[in-house]
Image (cartoon, rainbow, N blue to C red; front, side, top):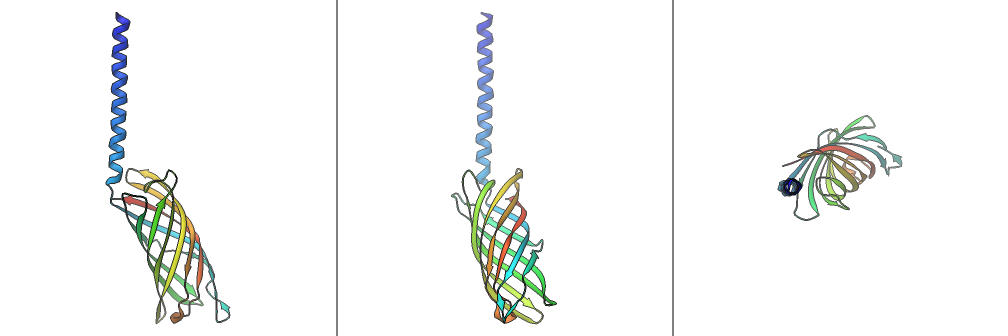
Length: 192
């Protein structure tokens, strides 16, 4: 009789633990899609390969993006997320001060077991480049593609690392050649 009572109590406790763990998993899964936006800040490093402009290979070299590189993603119910990006970069070409402001839209697609909060993703997009050198200014176009990953570091935050390519068209108004940027970005994302 004692063995029967112990077995029933043990089975009841085990059932309660399994039910509670299952409820916690359901609650955690229900909280994840509640976020509607992903906000992020990145820093980038790239090697820029400039095309010949007027017979001179101007502007090739290592470039570091300013810490003011921000992203806003609109978290979908499906797989494809739209992400707006704005970046600022300052550089010196032939002792002239140069700034580049890029504004664009990317599509972010998680693959494998990845989600919009963790794991591997592909991204690609297009944007405009606004530039100024001394008293001149101009606008160009850019295309980009990358592969990246997100690693959660808290309930609503993740470390994000991305590597890829960006092609910037020639901006004749300021004498800038077309540039192929090969590099990466590292940053942090928050969900709201």
